[in-house]
Image (cartoon, rainbow, N blue to C red; front, side, top):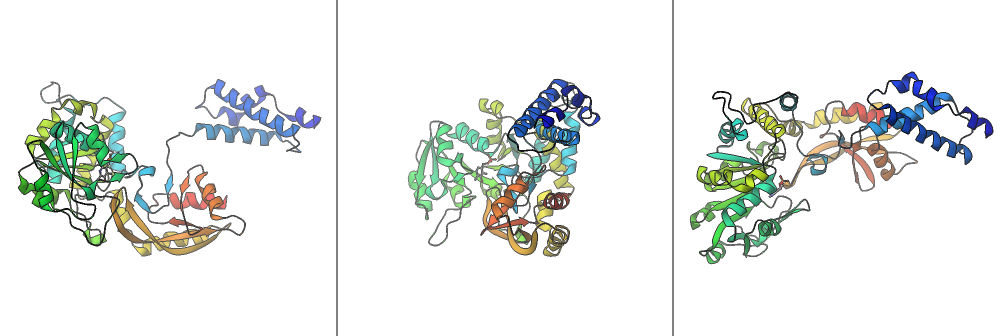
Length: 442
Ligand SMILES: *Cc1c(COP(=O)(O)O)cnc(C)c1O
């Protein structure tokens, strides 16, 4: 034991080691602290007879490993092998390279965020996107705020503060735990006026509820649940005949029909034909940055734009740069990464699965059928046929394998289904397959 203690290198020597010196992104004081911590751990391990020999290189490797782990950002890239394309916990929509490049360009220099280049006067941050975005989604006007929750809240506050918001009992939904329709109406200073029942609401229910103190009629996309059986809901077309402002929270904004994927969802353009104001998220089916889009008739959007709350909900230059590039991609007929994912056919997906089956040696890899979902509170009941691999091992159960994948330097997020670990091939991007292969072979 005594000998082992003697073999612990001097801190100064370690700090002079060329491999340690290469970690130039750290302050020396930080490196020293980490070296001392690791040496203390080694001392304890020697004392407890957990190690029986100690090589210089082992010590260096342990320190380098420690520094690398410490160097990881908290928010970082992970691999989504869950098959849920818009996974709220994994950051929802993925940006295309073009969109990301534009964000980088705008961020690493000054920009004309609120500067009118033609007049030299102060400009509006919204001016960069208002016209092109309105045109793209077929709206008279549009306003962008921080997210759809903010969009709904602002709309309620501006048009129904101290007044009643009429909403069907079948649409009082909770989305992702913290967005709940009754709570957001209350928080905005409006009073919720529930009509109908959970499964059936009629036009006459709305008619009966309308009075002088009605601020607006709210229609909400149920997003993450679906009721079947003896049901009835009132369309916005019918609601728009009642002479009150009609607002629809679309949840996920689809601007191109997804019928060809078997996904039936009303588009923003269709909704705008009969609704005064719609709201939706930017990072769900639209495939863009986290924003809330409020679109509709000019007279209403104008009121929202001038509302005091709007200043508190405004978006930053990062978001506007991303959104403007996304709009251009749509106009150019480019596919968003989400659409590319949806377009992957079973042949393509099988190739990915076969690659892992062929190249992973430490585990049993089987190619299996599975279902991907769109996610993000969109299209709750639609499943899309996909191909995955199941990963198993004679000595490790699915929980252990899941943990190993999740602990990888680039974490791989998988799902466990009936005690089996499944990696869905559809949500993989770029070099994800290589990373998964290396992780499992390690
Ligand atoms: C997702 C969703 C929201 C919340 O949108 P965020 O952009 O996450 O704030 C609100 N309403 C509906 C119907 C939704 O589906």
